Structures are given as C-alpha cells and as structure tokens.
Length: 240
Image (cartoon, rainbow, N blue to C red; front, side, top):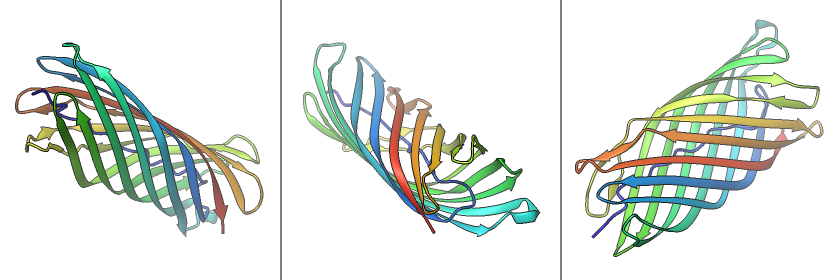
C-alpha cells in the first residue's frame, strides 16, 4: 500500500500594511501547492485553491525623531487546495490539503524617511491536514508552534505607493501519517512582497505575493519529499 509520506507548507507572514501604522485588514486570494515524493515510486501534484487572511498591526513605539520604532503584528492565514495525479506506476492519487496558521510578530525598525529597515521576531502556530486517496485512504497531519525570524525593508515609491519585501527563516515541524510514521524536516525559507496603496486617510488597498521553499522531508524509510508554495492576495486595511 502506497502512501504520500509528507507535505509541509509554511505560510507567508506578509503584513501588507505600512510600518508604524495601526490597522486591521483582510485579504482574499489563491494559493498553489506543489509537491513531489521519491520512494520506490514517484508522484508529483500541483494543487490550486482559495486562501484568505486577516491581520492587524499596532505601533508600540513611534520612531519620530529617534529613528527607532517597534510594531506588534498579528495574522491568521487559511489556505486549501486539491489535485489528482498519476504516479510512476500509473496509479491515481487524490489529495485534499488544508493549512491554517496564526502568527504573532514583533517588528523593530529603523526609519530613514522614505526607506525603513526592519527585523521580524516572533512565534507562529500552524496546523495542516492532508487527506490522501490512492489504493487506500490515508492522512498526514501536524500541529506545532515555532520561532520565526526575518529581515526586510519598506520603500515608499510615491506618496501613495509603498513596497515591503522580506525574507524569513524557521525550523520545520515533523508531521506524522495516520500509521504513526514520523518525517523530519529542517529549515524553511519564505519570501514575501507586500504592496500598499493609500486610498484615503483611513483606507489602504493592499496586495501581496509570497513563495515558500522547504528542505526535503525524510522518513525513517528514506522517503524524500519536496514542497513549494506560492500565494497571492488582494485586500483592504482600515487605519486607526
């Protein structure tokens, strides 16, 4: 009986609002899940699905004339997708994936006017479930809380537009299949490119793109799994 032994996807922690502002926001978009398994067989799937996120930011210390500031950001992300594919033995695989993540991030920053540099330090909790159907019905699941850290900058392109690329790192949890098989992951790397447009004094229009690359996940049976996720979203922030 063949199993899909591992897939683990980490979310973007892209806060699409501007640094130093108090806001709450929501984004709707799409997520693409690519993964592959190499064992005594090979299978690759490419799943697309709906995703949404809510987030908020509170400025704990305004840089002002001191140049230094500190934000506290909170976000919740949910994405899902399903796909069907044939493995190298011509057997069909159907997967149904759902991922949810809660992030709590401290963001110290240094203000240079139209250019700001920042670091991300925080925790995130992620919960993933994958229902798998091939010659049998299996499930992969994992729930963990991990430390995450990153760096980035914010650049004002005009009085209205700003861009905020960043990169973050974290340890990967070790999910299990329903037969109790553990899978060991290493590091994960996330690239994020949020964009913000100031529509009015209280409203920002936002967009974001992210890509997540994971190291291989390996089981005790030496099954190797690769995964990558890309997502985009459009949203709105209310500033207060």
